[in-house]
Length: 499
Image (tube, rainbow, N blue to C red; front, side, top):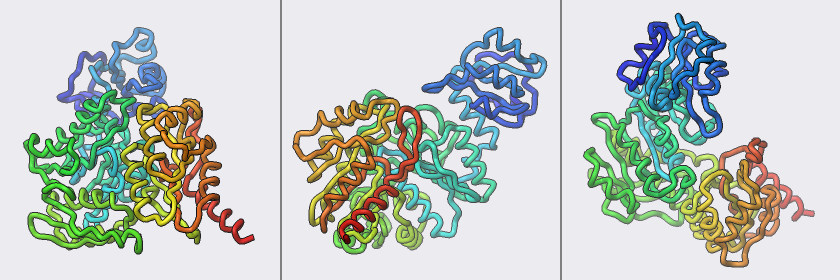
């Protein structure tokens, strides 16, 4: 495709230079530019792509797309007979749209399922993929943990990749004859136009609670951004909503689309009844009746935690919206394995539970500890911190929730990023009203101390990082796995008890 063809229908301020050059690739990182590539200069949080236009030109860029008018000295580095400069109002949006065009609008060749919400996106996406595959269809997945395109799996950097990478993944799925793609859609992705150019067959909203106010500033803005997912539905696209969430419920009446609702407390289309509590404790799974407009059936799941009932219901709602039959749904729910770092119980032969979970919002932490309390005969011991360079207003709330709901709490470091870990901890302590906590900034030491005091029947929770295998300190990532550390200290604890 030529630059002109890729830009067709887009909002262009002005162009300078030839637009008929055949484009061989796209890049938003100048280091990845090759001959006859388009380089899109994007303003990032730390780096401005406009500062790297000269570098892109030196590597053979055939076109530069930018927001700022090109400065004269940059043009001096280009052959104006073979290089074009294109000024646009929003380079991020342009990147998304030309990426979709360059890869042949892959989302239109897939049944794309978008899942948004504060919590539950990852688990819902994996259950949904399992249901689809139980029916004999192929499904790719893009989300917080990994990107699966059929031929390969990559570890994810962001919940939703940058638009160029996203469209490349979707294109790979089309090439690999995937029929469905399940996509976790973050509020950042919606706000930053990463998913512009995607068309959804179904879009689900799992729940809405406080998070990311460092980015969105207000809950109103955060919610408004979340609902933008419904702007990109296919003509026959369906909406799937959690009717038990008071913020989400009104959308069912307001949106002019076919809506499938799910819930436990409300009169939703897809409802859970007769939830088996004993299965959570005895077999590490869930079992409940599902009521639908067509009747009902019972599902069994390997997933632990009653909060996972909502994730299963959301997946069933998506399957129902896609016309998947109940036998396939039952088979897919039963086959879905627990997701790494999501209420994951680590068993090294100890006589107490050890749970690793990704919970990093107040709501998720509350649900996590509540569930641990339900299944615990003894004490609940929680290890938790908060990330740096993120919404600081949730830190005292998380400190309060951890202290109020746990018997003992170890306040520690999470991913401090560029912040002082002790300052983050001080923010958390502002919310704590009880004297049941210990401050231990070193995360491994905090985990070790929590395990060392655990007795038979207790539960040790390590919250906040889940599947992540790093700690980010002073802008550097260091290898660190809550799961590996927890397994190691459990074994050490057992060895010590046996001496």
